[in-house]
Amino acid sequence: MKIVLTGSPGNIGRPLTEKLLHKGHAVTMISSNPGRIKDIEAPGAKTDIGRMEDVEFLTATFKGADIVYCMETPEAAWGLFNPDLDYISAINKNGNSYKKTIEEPGVKKVIHLSSVGAHTEKRNGILVFHYNVEHLLRQLPEDVSIKFMRPASFYNNMFSFIRSIELQSAIISNYGGDIKDPWVSPLAIADAISEEMESPFSGITMRYIASDELSPNEIAKALGKAIGIPDLQWQVIPDEQLLNGTLTAGMNSDVAKGFVEMQASQGSGAVYEDYKLNKPSLGKKLNDFAKIFATVYNKSK
Image (cartoon, rainbow, N blue to C red; front, side):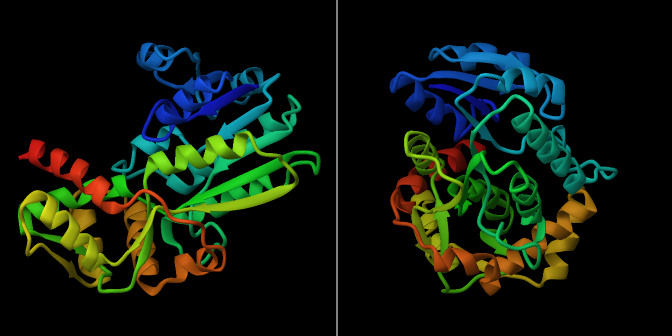
């Protein structure tokens, strides 16, 4: 099959590309960075350089594709510390580009990387953009089949803990405790997407992806053991204190508020309401990632 991927070769795109090429598919990856061409084409994929907001470019690239894999990768993704950025509007613009360019060249099979929390437009903070884009894509003609992939929090997001561990010897957030949340390895996401690409498409479907379910205290214990800090704690601070910290660091105010609300929603469980009704089988465990985390942590010193 001819498959077009958006998102450049990252934690999901790279292993996904390798899996699809190994299975004999023709893969084209879209990137906005010409410097990524060698990295993309090394395993045998083709590269198209352009912007996700460029409808004419996307239309030409999507034309003739058997399957299109879409994820939101607007230029805004690299501007979280831009005080003038309207992040949600930028993501919505990307979603509208996908809607127009899927419909015009006649693409009939779409896989969209969404997220837990995309089932609602309330109490999910920054994740509301996933709800918005899903809503846009659901407006496509009935003969377009869409698979919404909703992964849990990425293990790789835990790299953001490194700074507070170094500065305060603790993981700092506005939620914590012993209630388990779902987390996922990017490799598991690539596996699931590859599997869905070779499975029948019919209408609009949704699939949650998770590798493990862990409480904040369990995460602190596992990561602490891996980095040689066995008494590492996950400390909970008020929403306002976390918000003030992110604003002091220079983050865009709307984005900062969205992240704080999202984490509060993780603590209340609101963001996982639909996930709990559609639980997937689990796979790659945190202990495997903890070794990677330790390597990155030690290099950061």
